[in-house]
Image (cartoon, rainbow, N blue to C red; front, side, top):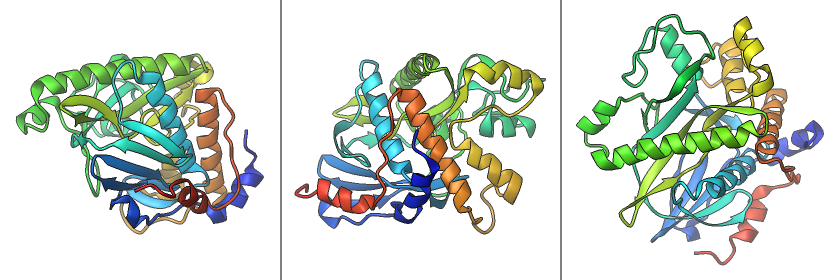
Length: 315
């Protein structure tokens, strides 16, 4: 496990943004800088951290964790569905096939947690699904729920029902059925893989696109940004006690923001102290190591210089 001293040293070297005009047209997302040229896209995963749909700060090695973990999962799931990956020339970079991504995220939930729990407490439906009365925080669903959301370019993603997706013709009905089936298969695979490591895949989101008329998996998969992970050995005791689960994901920061800063996305951006940034980095790296069963290679220094070197000659 990478020690916290290394993480503190990396605070002054986090990757906030990139600018490589030779790679093509740039599109800046919350976390990833995308460069598109013809049928190819270069995705550089930065260290930016977003919560409640706002970019708040940078986290040491976060981009490397996300990129390498997504690469691990794309490899693990390629028998279920093809993905867009061509090559990974740098720990923070993925070169992929350009595809037409659908404007919705397929969210799969195995447990009542996060925004679903907050909505449930407020008496709201979740993507058109009305849950049973009397459910408790962190309760496991009898079968995983599909609760899609819109994919907003800016601002908040919003829950959307299956019926509304089809009514708005956001996705062809047959393709949407395929997306549902594959999303559940991916969640099952993820659940089985992390169970061997003593973890629970709580919920996650998948993004799909079309490439040459065929469905492919895009963006990221089963990372601490897109998923929640808990420890299996303490789940039952904490659930019975009504306490928060031990988390290996971004929910730690969301809870800290709500509790300490009373922040849920509105108002001025809160200051994130360095010790919290280091704690988040430590959790991301721990998630990588516990999920993959391999050590994370953390080298203190400017990742931008390394990326520039590794992308030299690419156009």
